[in-house]
Image 1 (cartoon, rainbow over the protein chains, first blue to last red):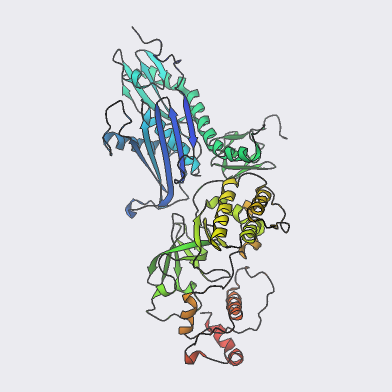
Image 2 (tube, rainbow over the protein chains, first blue to last red):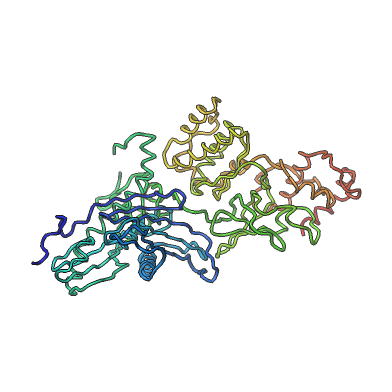
Amino acid sequence: MAYTKRHDDRKPTETRPITAKAGVIPKADGSGYFKIGNTEAYAAVYGPRELHPRFMQDPKQGVLRCAYNMMPFSGQGDRVRPGTNRRSKEISMVMANALRPVVDLDAYPNAVVDVFVELPQTDAGSRCAAITAASIALADAGLKMKDMVAAVAVGEVDGLLVVDPDYKEESQEEGDVADIPVAMIPSTGEITLLQMDGKVRKEDLLAAIVQARPVFERIAEAQRQAIKRRYEEVNEEIKGPRSR
Amino acid sequence: MEGTAESVLLAHDKDVVAPGEVLAEGMEYLPSHGTYRKNEKIYANQTGLLIIEGKVLKTIPLAGVYIPKRGDTIVGKVIDILMTGWRFDTNSPYSAVLPLKDATFDYIKKGTDLTTFFDLDEYVVCRIVQVTSQNLVDVSMKGPGLRKLKDGRIIRVNAMKVPRIIGKRGSMVSMVKQATGCTLVVGQNGLVWLKGEPEQEIMAVDAIRKIEREAHVSGLTERMKMWLQEKTGKTVNSELYEEPEEGAAYERRYDRGERRDYGERGGDRGRFGDRRREYGGPRDYGRRGYGRDGDRRGGSGGDRERREFRQRESNEFPSEPATPPAGAQQPEAAAEQSHGRHDSEKSDE
């Protein structure tokens, strides 16, 4: 039997509930939080700051470094062994690649911007949540960015094109399952991350991305609201709720 | 808002905007700092406060680290002693170098231990004189108000909010000074040094934190005035300064007034003073042509600035009781007549 109705009654293009916040880590130069369903990511940005060791410095522009980390208790019941592993190393790299096109680091030669992402709980789509949270944190740190990077996974679960599959859908055994994390610059439609796990036809891949297009805009809007709310809270505290 | 049928403004003046936000559509509006145009739309490319000036859209940053700029007065911390100078941490990704010749007017003998002037971990107020494309920074200690900071405490604030902490023509900082009786030095780089009675220091810190937090909300000066009056029970005078136009304070970073607000001048020379006497005592650069006759920051007035600085110091400390080495003592009048010109020439090298 084909997968026609999602197990949590979501529409195919509906994401799980989203929460986005900025300024959650006071010590950091910028920070962001993004939760989608049971996948949760905290991002902290430090810098631009001095880069050591010096051989890593780039005299033309600043360097963007990312670090993705799943907490030991964040998985599906099994303890995630702490420390970097092959997977987290790869995700750190693709995150940096996904974010670099929007961040303008020309003004910071020889410096580094560090992005640390921690995931307290994961239920599929963790690299997308990480990129989304990191994007909020970078904007909160006051860096020049032409847009926010929004990321969400799309996929095909036994013939049904879906947005934001959770772990239950992703690990379904019946039929072919494809999990395709995508990061996009919403204002231009450029894709900065596209990976795939599973099996999908070319037309389905394209259709899945096209049908998810409005979702990226919604996520980007949530990201921007998170940044603004941080300042508007102070505004409201002083002047009362806004009546615009 | 005005605008043709095709041009639409999608945000309000003084809104907080986030990167990627569409601020206006159509070619009627013009992008400035913190915004860019792509096709027919203007986007924000930085978290900031939107300022609409006629048809020009720009944002004032609300967050970000300090990047050294020429002419800024900053508070730096000594992190290294070099062969011929000091290296300072500037609370930015780039450290600054203070060469010996820009540190003091005095003759420094070869082999002198430089820590006698500025030791590791000590703080100074200095001025950035040069920044290269690779952000190598040179600073100087020659200028009014530039000195070593002893005692007191240092706090770190968001460097993008420093203009608000200083206020238009230094209005905000002088209000805090007036209310708390603390001495304050606000560096453009976001380091603030303050010194006063313990309780007053804490109050001043709270005041600065409040300014930092509420910098983007209009009516800040009035709010701070009320807050300070309530806390101290004193009447705080801000009448001298009218409320800055919203956002204006940000642009007026280099208003002439605020420069003079870098604390009491020449006050505490610390080891500096002792050192100077040991190496021959204060020299006299002569007083001819000296006058407080204008804008001294106009560029090339190096010699005059030096003379003026020196004279002020010798006026404020006319008779220091310390005993200078025998050779250093000269009748002042005589020095002025016979050596004045000579000395000032020498100082030009």
